[in-house]
Length: 350
View 1 (spheres, one colour):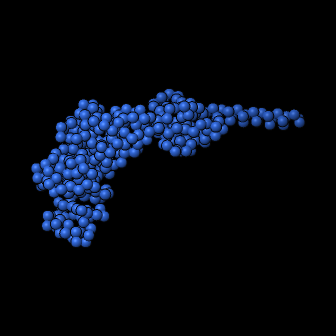
View 2 (cartoon, one colour):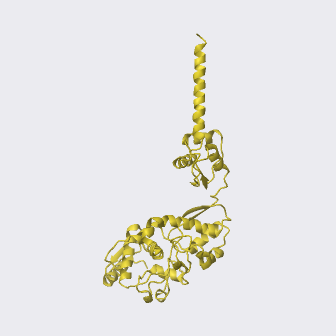
View 3 (tube, helix red, strand yellow):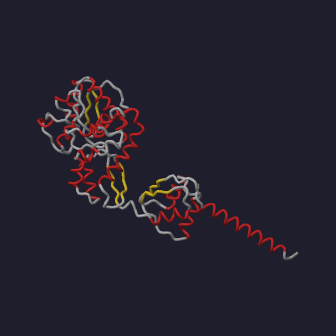
């Protein structure tokens, strides 16, 4: 009888060990052996192992965040590289960890393109971070053949971008964001396609509204991006521009003049230059009731939304003071009074 108790204990321990082994095998096994759908997981630069575990669990690629962390800790795995990885649910835990460790880093080159910037600025950033020279990037951005190759690939790119009066056909269509690329040798086509892919995601919610004339909405968004300071006043400004177009007035937007001249907004522009006829310059008398030939910046999603869903109003003029506060007027008399008041108070922008 005395031998039975130790035997029972051994049997219980054996059962527990077997159960633990079975459970462990289950936890490290593929989530679905029959589903090989590719799932992309982006590991941001500086992401912790806990954050990576959470992402993998949310994407249903691993069964247990805790076991993932234990495996990483116990086996002294190397740090994981910032990259975009492709997994599927047929992979077990060890295969996923191995791929995370051994994949060539795709985050060696990271570029942040800010909203409201021009392609000329983007070209400098690309040249600074990759082996593509500034002249090569800029010349490619002017090249109708290079830019035209994307027209049939993306629904929002139309032949409007190939107008000979447009400086850079893809201006306005390169989504501002932070991007990771494989290394300095990344080719320009890959960079542009990556940005256009992101633009497609940004525009998708508005597709039914803008599909008939995306060029108009992107152009309007690009102006609102520079003229406005937040979603509210951008929507008001687009509403005003729509009023002016309907009244066959020119938009009278100074920022289009600067772009037409390819000058920085910090530069001084003469009255003669403001009146200069240009396919972009909406201050020109020849631009009554017309939009610029194309976008003047690469706008944010906020500005795109403003162009699609503007605030309807009965204003026809607006002006900003040196603090970027915007004042609206219904007619030229009110507008002139506002400007006079701003000059008198010392708040005039110029």
